[in-house]
Image 1 (cartoon, rainbow, N blue to C red):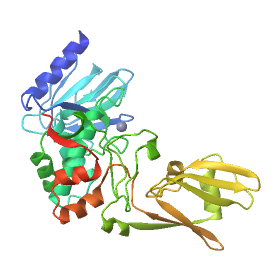
Image 2: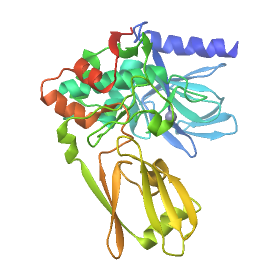
Image 3: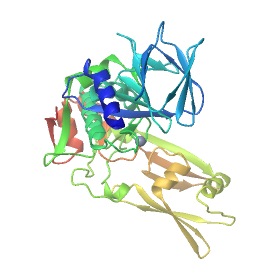
Image 4: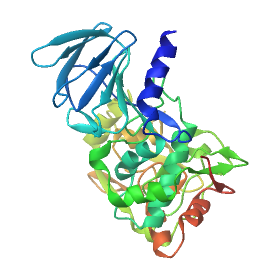
Amino acid sequence: MKYLIIFSIIFLLLSHSLSQEIPIIRVGLFKIDKEINFTNVGEILNSYINVEVDGKGNLSLRLEEKSAIINFGKDLIILTLPIFLNPQKDKLISVNSMTYKGILEISENGWIINTLNLEDYLMGVLPGEISHSYPLEALKAQAVSARTYALINFGRHKFFDLCSNVHCQVYKGVNFERERTNIAVKETMGEVITYNGQLIKAYYHSSSGGITENSEDVWGEYCPYLRSVRDVEEVNNDVWTVPLSLEEIKMGLNKANIYLEEIFSIELEKSSTGRVKNVIIRINDEKWTIKGTLWREIFNLRSTLFDIKYDNTRIYLLGKGMGHGVGLSQRGAKFLAERGYNYREIIKFYYKGVETQKWY
Ligand SMILES: [Zn+2]
């Protein structure tokens, strides 16, 4: 019964502004750990009560156990979680100066969840994931990938669909929206990528460094459409160098519980595309194997596509590209668009054997 009421509240709050066909997504923004401030709140609801908020809709809120203590300046109320905050008419609600479309929910476990339609969500995603100055066709390819990625990951988190950081997709709400990324979302509305009629795992990354990676070589899972492709030549210029002293390597490896004192050698085990699958460290007869992805994390590297060179005092990691290398390469998409590829052609370049189709 309680959930029926909650669903009814969400439906009532959203139905006036949303098309029925566009999916509604629940995005986890952050977990409340101290007092936070809202503006433009029109009403606050829970299963028992509906409170209208006057003036500019300013309030501050903190949590205690399963309740929200809401301070309006003069008045104070305590409401049982979950609660829903609806914006004032023709306004958008803000929390700690970040503004969001749709409504905000504070869940029983203290997360702020933004419930809004998927197209509005994507407008808040694209600027955080790709440069808005890229050609429009590249932005449209990104929009279709991000839409597909979101849909296939619905329910990824226990209490909401997707989180708002790099774990899922970066989402920053309205303040960060850009005109050109909004156009890319609007011009591809409802369009997704499918393989045999099913949504694909539309992974994407900043730059392949010259060649994209087979899915199984990064995550162990084979996907027929996430095959390695030779990228456009221009991304070969996305190079980087990280010098590391012996001391820095030792300190970094401490994080992986490897403690070195003596002389050692480092070897790289690579995938077919040249990405480092394992780093092998030897000290006399002893040997440690560290996954390339963990090595990347420890030393904060842009990618696992790198080689090693030495001099007397340091080793140098000489790398290419940025990101995991699977699926669509955003830098590559930029250059393909500049060569005249449209967004569908860009998508089919990076995901093998796929189609694009209207999902809603
Ligand atoms: Zn997440």
